[in-house]
Image (cartoon, rainbow, N blue to C red):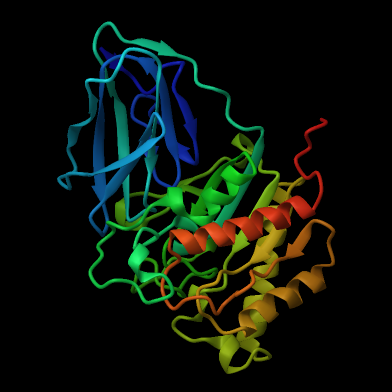
Length: 351
């Protein structure tokens, strides 16, 4: 039996391109489809569209996590997830481990003919969105042996896992749904950062898209009315030092002033998109010049809004020269979730 993507009991989360209801495209890290069923096995039909890295998909079946690599030929393939499952209800979440280093088309699940499909538990009522870069995506997070050190050479994507990003960890601690609107290498402005070298695409060209990697076809706008967060984490200011670290060189220079003005304009645009959300400005514990955090604080003070806050981790900007590994992400998630709690009831739970 084939369970098509438009089956009424499938549950989705994340910015997903549903232009084709029986072939939705998964783009952003952490986006997922969930199925609750009673059957002794399950496969999935996926078509991978690769830009770089070896691409992996993650899943959690009955609380146990697994992954599999995707075939890179751009054709639809069937991937076995489980066989010989015990009788009774099973819960499967198939999720995107990686950012738009690839996208994939989901064409449905294959299950035995006698499988029974159940409704999933509702999504959390609380909603968080994280705009950021590779750290927010959980890139290289599973390189546990490299805590506090540079990334392993030639990792090629195998260690990247959005489930272990501080973004998703913090959301789970708060019992919140999360949209990880983040991309490895992205800075705020186009022509800076590392994403889509040598032309470089910044968050200003990513934030309002459901498809945004020009190497994977035409970009598509996102409809902000489809999903409104209560809290927005803006974790930008890391890759912005490439190709020129304007804040380290002179935080009062015209180029630095331009970045601060653009950063403020970006926040103000998001505030219009999300008129009830609280905004938390931050960077990460990945090493960077402290002038970036001072610049962010300057913008926060200048805006003087009760909806805009500046948050620093305990070892902000000096925690590691490499990507954030699972234990480090756990600590970040603890601190971030505690800070969000300190803001009071931001969830509009009495509405």
